[in-house]
Image (cartoon, rainbow, N blue to C red; front, side, top):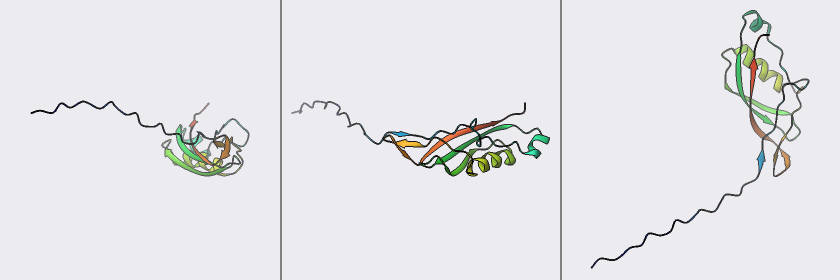
Amino acid sequence: MFAKTQAAAPVEAPKATGPAIVPGVIDFNVPGCKPEYPRASLRNEETGTVVLSVLIGADGSVADVKIDKSSGFRGLDNAVRTQLMSGACKNKPGTVDGKPQQTWTKVQYVWKLD
């Protein structure tokens, strides 16, 4: 004798309801945020895009900066990292469930000659 089997209906997994996280924002057009073009890089006509991960504190200050993708020039990479870490740039902090919290955000800075 053969037993008749029936396929079970798929069970939908419960949806994960974690905190609503909104990353912080860095605006390089705000005074104190735009890095100065390194002189050696100007002389050598170096350009490129730096991709960074930035840890922004609940007060908008920068706590850490990691270079995810280099512009191809150490001077350009270091200049934007140093400017962000200098404390001169106040940013919009990220939020967790609507409250300011320390969050990581990704930004890119494009170095170009005018």
